[in-house]
Image 1 (cartoon, helix red, strand yellow):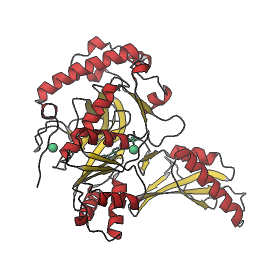
Image 2 (cartoon, helix red, strand yellow):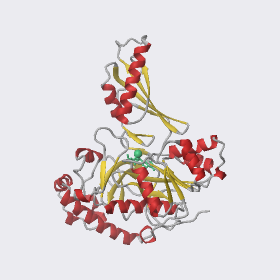
Image 3 (cartoon, helix red, strand yellow):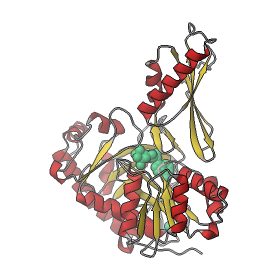
Image 4 (cartoon, protein in one colour):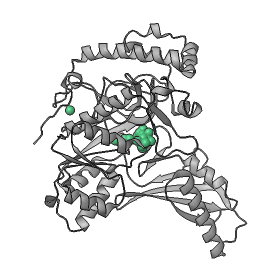
Length: 437
Ligand code: ADP
Ligand code: K
Ligand code: ZN
């Protein structure tokens, strides 16, 4: 039975015309703040010949230059902060990047906005003060744990801050405390659910009724599998550190798209090549502009995530635009166990290994619902393939370097010279067997 709970009717069910007006006003304010306080973006606007006064409605957004992840890296750590340093009360960062990570600064206002966005999601799935909400996202710089925690606290639930890992203990607590909701990555949720079954626990012995799962792509098939295992409702939740973490968009009981919190973020879909806006239903790159953030506001931030948008009133009563599942990325970033991995990072590790050639293949599989990363490395011609001890030492060194650089474990397979397929065009460095999208 579908019940439509709505946390903030005024904002979530607002008349679309009225909302456009509100968005226009907030956009102007954001642009003024950015122009006054962020020299890197001011320079970009000057170059494009656009001033804050030129932004009088959301239709004017097309005049504004885009922002990219490289802007965050180039201005690391504080270059894009629009607020006074004393007003920044939190730093959150992206999960998987090496070297200079991507960080965002949050003012009290930004934390409140983020909390409200996640509270809307949790309420939407039926969460409230009678609920026991187990958070099995990692806590830390990663936005998953704290984001879910704040939202669950806001709706008055009894929050269990488990963080990720310790699977048997998670399940014991889930049972003993009578957790009614679960928040974690979809792959971890599946692993938990499968372990629950393996332990001989029937879902009826648990009180779990629903959960929010995000931070990585997943499929409708995975939802069905998960819902069957736990006999509950599994919902998708989307977000990214740069825009404010999880809760930027969340699914309602209709389960056919995620409602974007449009009073706080403005979404566009563009053609990633021409940068022209695309209409509803046409897949393209998702672009976000924050409308209420004051710490690190973002204007036309290119997410590299591919999806479609659908406007209109949902059966749940919300009038906010819905985004489809993410079906792919415009760059070669892989999301492995929620951690962002670029093939170039693996390449740079291999470049530092004397015996390794520049030829490699990254293989990603899903085994027992967990992502498994294998790196096949072609050895240089002069390496003695008969020296097993030496080979083991090389493999182990590469494994350690990958772990240190990317913060995730990989299996390393050394292969003889000239065995990795060569390419004449774009090199194919990735074999992703997870069938996503
Ligand atoms: P986090 O640290 O929360 O993982 P990142 O900024 O590192 O945040 O990663 C954000 C990226 O994760 C998004 O741009 C998107 O590619 C992916 N992502 C987040 N939520 C989802 C989701 N529900 N479905 C698909 N991909 C998602
Ligand atoms: K991620
Ligand atoms: Zn809806």
